[in-house]
Image (cartoon, rainbow, N blue to C red; front, side, top):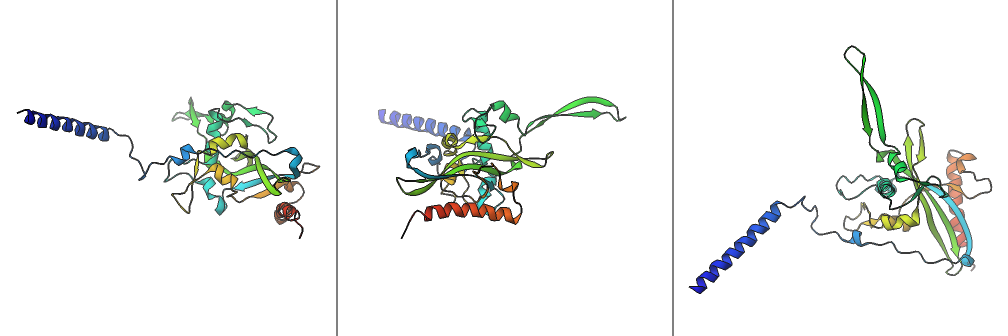
Length: 277
């Protein structure tokens, strides 16, 4: 008799557990769109830069370059996350981090005038007031339309970086100093820097954001990986010079591209010239 009651009790407990499991499954949120839990990205940290002593800097050159998302190698910059919904474009990552106070952004590339989160939030967004008329053409009321920020208007990024030779390691190195999304303004018909983000401060944010990899869905780089490993195509628009001129200020067209290549080759040759055989 006691054995029968014990069996009945076990069946009762098992039934309760199954019912609880079924209920939890039925009330579960959106199903996981993957066959495993992705935790690597959330656990990533930016690798700190090694300390560079001023006395070890044998040579240095500062350049400004542009990354054009329309180039094939730069397609990850314009990926809109149509399938992998967790991904964001670079401009949205930087914009949201600036609005949330995770990073400080600046008004110019020498990083002296900080912009407030409110200024960042209203750039490219805001409200428009449209006058509404009745059927007879007379004014009836004003309608306020909210304008959301459109990330597709950013197709280029400006990068400020320093190339230098470390005498201690006898290596050419590069450090990105600042990044600026370029927003296309319809009225002015030019591309305007939205803000300048100090790259070393952004690395902790970028290290936790994935970049689309067209070669392998299982191997996802972070935005910090992409920049540090130089997985992008770009062209130089300015080098440090006495007159503070950009390349477009003294040449244009094909000659501007040749001048950009000349500056790039000069940096490469500088490292080669270090060695004598």
